[in-house]
Image (cartoon, rainbow, N blue to C red; front, top):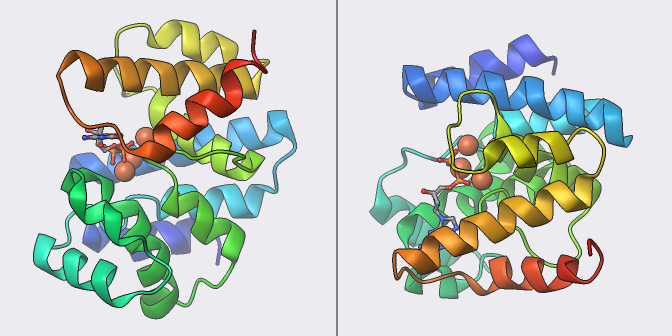
Length: 188
Ligand code: DGI
Ligand code: FE
Ligand code: FE
Ligand code: FE
């Protein structure tokens, strides 16, 4: 499946602005993949489909999380914004025939991250954070780090996201904290 074929498959599942976000994430992920030696076809597929399930009804996502052995049920104890990646990692296979476990893992983890992420997973996580349409406080520093240090950029994105959630007194998913702890010593 080439990029145009993938984009036309995802388009009917997204709003116009979410589709434009997806195009920007894909271009950003392809730049990062070239820079950090990640297989471009995998970065393309994972970024095109990372938000494939963003607009699924909550009751459908809840049912899929409950039914699917590989999806952790503790997701249901956290904000429903955390569900669309894990659910998409299952539905891209059953609905679209995307079988690559690397691609599906990058889709799974794109919102929270987790410890010992692969470079492909980091590229998709970071591309989603720094794509040119995002305006997040401190994002320019993350974009600069992303030109030369994948781990430092991922760490900063993770740290900013956790700080933001804590400042709003929101729950933080444990795997996001695991990513923080995994990288904190490495990037000093
Ligand atoms: O789908 P996108 O909007 O492109 O971005 P995303 O999948 O990275 O994040 C979706 C939302 O999830 C975003 O508003 C931030 C929120 N989020 C990320 N990690 C956590 C979280 N919300 C809570 N409550 N806890 C988290 O750990
Ligand atoms: Fe997302
Ligand atoms: Fe993200
Ligand atoms: Fe996204």
